[in-house]
Image (cartoon, rainbow over the protein chains, first blue to last red):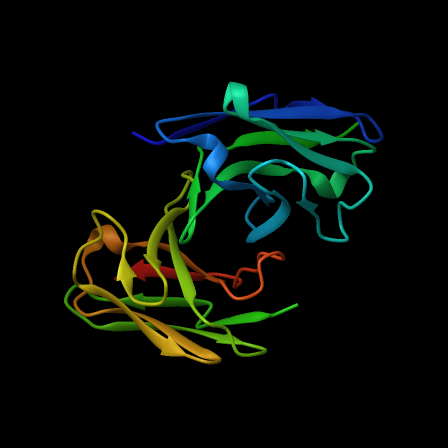
Length: 115
Length: 107
């Protein structure tokens, strides 16, 4: 069974950093592009980052470029999102997703940026 | 970046009725995916590559379209279909782009 389990969320002050993790199981992790997608409270879905199978290529929207870094460890079947210089508008549930003929989603982890 | 516009934003239907949700793209896309999200849960892949049902999706759901216009159709609504549905284009990825969502309520 495919499983994606996010962790690392919580309450953080504006300007601080946080690192999210996603543990994957039930499939060959290294064969898939992976992504992070977020959803602010009562809002729609917003793409945050994508990483290639080897990790050599990464992609971001302008809203997080230069502040967020996506990475992966294929040996550990794990995906990460390093978030720096956090802003209140980064408050959202963050989902790890496997990209293959559509996205397969984890259960999500909440990040609240507030003083 | 391809912008996706969903309509309607919200809709309400009675059990047994037919519902159509539309997703229009600002430029031509090759395929469209659809997700179902119930309150408090993560999105689930529902329809992929425009018309293929994901595992476990009832066959009262269908998808169609091409170019800049795509649809998710529910032939006969059931109470369990209450959810928000999002479209997502496949052509230019990245960036991943989603529609703004259609909330389906059951009368």
